[in-house]
Image (cartoon, rainbow, N blue to C red; front, side, top):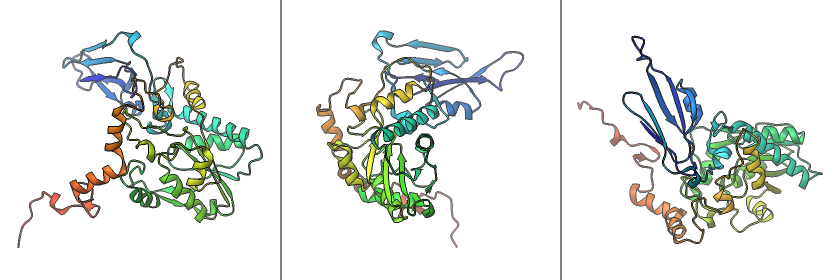
Length: 351
């Protein structure tokens, strides 16, 4: 069993162990596991040993011996974990690099609320409603700081995939309506603050804001626990090309107009970094924030030819073309969105 982490520690990986049920005759044996989040270690009944270090390889041999080695000198490893893990990807009950994801999201909501009070001291917000699921933790704390009630206004259909990575604008718009439904009594006649974890293309946010208005909201404000996403990610997150991002070359006023809300407030990048740092006993290391800042820890420049190639592969038109060419526009093995009968390999009797 082999575990390895990249030299910058961009993606998380943890290491766990437990006493093996195969232990016998007084000879204690150990089982080991690697996972991207500590919650998986807990669920499987293992004890968390630690995070794998940047550039570290851990090899467990068949006889149960553990061998560890840093593949690069420590001074050549610039530790910069991806901050988007804390914003969106990780489960709130996970601990990543000694930092509680849950605590960091509480801090994000707290700092958002203070920014709203700073910029809109006479705000007329009646209620705070999260856009489920990831933003709930931040919304709870934002509501507490603002002194406004927290309410669940959207009910989520858990059988719809993440919309921001779906190919095609129309597909994403339709999926938002299938994914969420409103509790109209929470919106009717109220000035609503919607809290989201992040805004990527803006497709989801636009539909949700309109749903809030259709449910009777008087005013709709939007706040994001993440800063404006203005650059593509090249470290494993399928964030689209720059021109497809709603924040690309736009300020908050322009974004609010496109989304259809009364105003929008984004988290400041410094506040986001502080939210994470303040939620655990961690050193003052940098974070991988390229989709917000345009600074890539591996040295790429946004004007490099690589990003032009990335655009050709990731833009909506290219994705839709590949989908049509490979599956006639349907997901693999799909028949109008249902399992294709030809995939049924059971032997059937005829007659």
